[in-house]
Image (cartoon, rainbow, N blue to C red; front, side):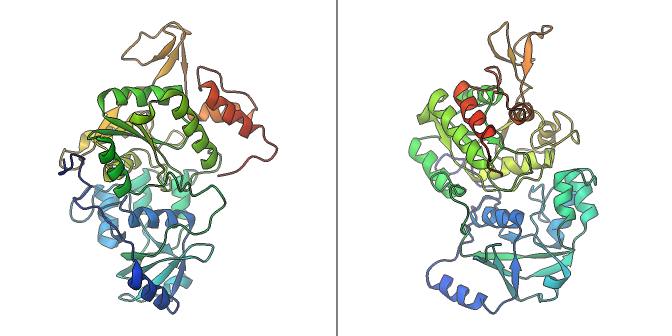
Length: 397
């Protein structure tokens, strides 16, 4: 634990890559004459996560040695656990404008100057190594593989110097009241007197099984951080603004506000299953949480990963690798006989008794215009979801 009682940042130091004041003015002026790189949605998310320290100890996009070590060993070249390479891929046309030892301006798709990168390395994007190491598949039907497939053939490694991470977006997409940086969540936990905090990762509305996991964690920790991912997700996922309304609704009606904190994580999903579970855990350690809820098929997609692979991967690491403690939960279900949520550890399995829940099932019901039943979603949350699903022109993520 650190001096204030909270878990230390991953790697020991909480990174901050923002440039302010006179230095920012100089950098902005110089950037106009630099080579220009337009960031994809995924890259813009990654830049923000590096800048705010969520990806500590990274200070920029990874170079060749770190890229290869991460893909092969799930560690940076210095041995620090890091499961997914955070890369800046460019195509031939952009690569030809860059020089190793030089700098480049990083811009959002809307033209906003976000940062400047020190071009320390330009190296070949070994997609095969990334597919096999990170995703355990090269199947282009896997959304994470497809995203890498669509990227450029060259990777740029180097530190970033950040001016802003919040360009103009559509109204409501920034969630300014809930967009707390790791340093801010740590300060909030200290203000509340929390020393142990459990984090719950989600890209779906909280259904009854999620609520069960969260409240089990609350029983053993001082507080709960509900930490939805609001960066780039795949088509078909429920839009971030709808999900945020669901989170606020369920907290208002079914959680103790003094013991519950809601903030957003601006990361892009990789759908990398076990490796992404480790990434999500170390990120939450940077945000100051001591425990991390890992449920069934965490960050998985399709049937690429085993049901509990994302839990078992933590068994391969020591206490020195990660300070955050994984809370491993069985698949929870609603039991008609018990009139509540149960798992294989807490209640016998009776034929026809249990209703298994999933975000996928809820999305299927909504796509058919059906209201999720009480065994799936709290009625107040179901109201939000069915209103969105039956709108003439529902928003898209």
